[in-house]
Image 1 (tube, one colour):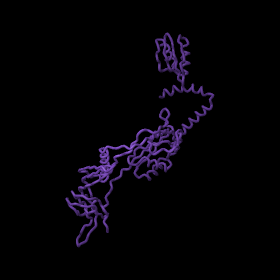
Image 2 (cartoon, rainbow, N blue to C red):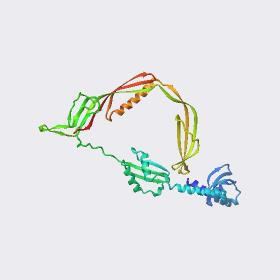
Image 3 (cartoon, rainbow, N blue to C red):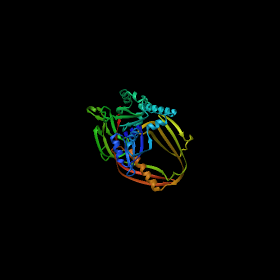
Image 4 (spheres, rainbow, N blue to C red):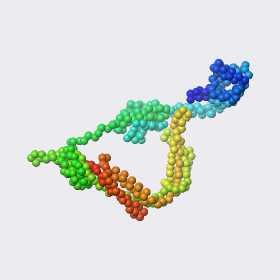
Length: 394
C-alpha cells in the first residue's frame, strides 16, 4: 500500500523496451539505481516495465549508447494530475477546500461504538453522554475524560467505569458494568409466609417461625403457611421475621383463541425508493417523493458509510429506504398450524406465571373450533415454591 502511494506521488510511467540484448537494459537500471517494477516479457527482445518520471529520463539517458528503443505507453500519478490542473483554478480551489474539510471533519465525532455493556442499553449510555455535551459534532480533542466519567457514572449506577477514546471521527465508548452483591434478607422486618396460589403441599421448610401446614395439606391463595408470631411464657407473644419455603403441586388451566383466517401479503402493488444523506444529525433528502406511506407497506432501510481508501470514514452516511406495498388477501389456515401456534403461546404464558425454580410435571392440550376461531386449552401440573413473605399487621 505504501509503495503504491509513493509511486503515485512520484508518477507511474509504463514503458515498452525493444532491444537485441534486453538484459543489458535491466542491468543498466540496476547499475544507475533506476527504480523499476512489474517487468513483463512480451518476446525475446521486447518487455514492458514500470518506472517513475525521473526514472524514465535516467533510463533514456543511460540507454542512449545502445540499440534499445524505448516508447512510453501511458503515465499516471500526482505530477500528471497537477499538470492538468495547473491553470484550472476553480478545481484547485475545490480540491483545497475538500482537503480542509476532510482534515477538519477528523477533529469532530461523527459516530459512536459502545463496548462492554451487557445489561445497560447502548442507547441509555449515549443519551447520558449527550446530556453532558458528548454527541455527534463534538470536538474530540476537548474531552475531559475524568470529569466526563464522574458525571456519567453518577447517572448510570449500573456502570463502574467508562472511557471515551476518539480515533479519527469515531468515539469508542468502553464501559464496565457493576457487579451487584446478592440481596441481603432483612431479619428486622416482621413477616408471615402465605400461599401465592392454590396447591397441594409437598414439603415445608420453616427457617424462622412456626409451620402452620404439613405435607399433604391442601392450601388456598393467601392462606398462612409459616407464622411470624412466636408464643412465649406467660401468654406473651413475640413478632419475628417468618421465612422459609413451601413446595407444592399446582394446577393451571389456560386458554387462547387463534384465528383460522389471517391476512397474508401477496403480489406487489408498487414500490418506492428514497435516498437521503445523513450529515451528523441532519438529514438531507436527495431523491424520492415526500408522500405519506400507507400502513400496509414493508420498509427496508440500508445505511452505507462513506469511506475513503485506507478505511478513513467520512461524516456522511447514504441512506436508502425502499417501500414495498403488497396486496392483502384473507387466507384460510390449517387447524393443525393454528393449534401449534396456540400451544406455543400457552407454553410461553405458563413460563411467565411460574417462578425460576418451578418445574412443569405434565401438560395436556385440547382444542375446539368456534366459528372462525380455534380455542386451544392447556391444563398443566407443576411443582413450585408457593410461599411469599407479607408484612405482619400490628
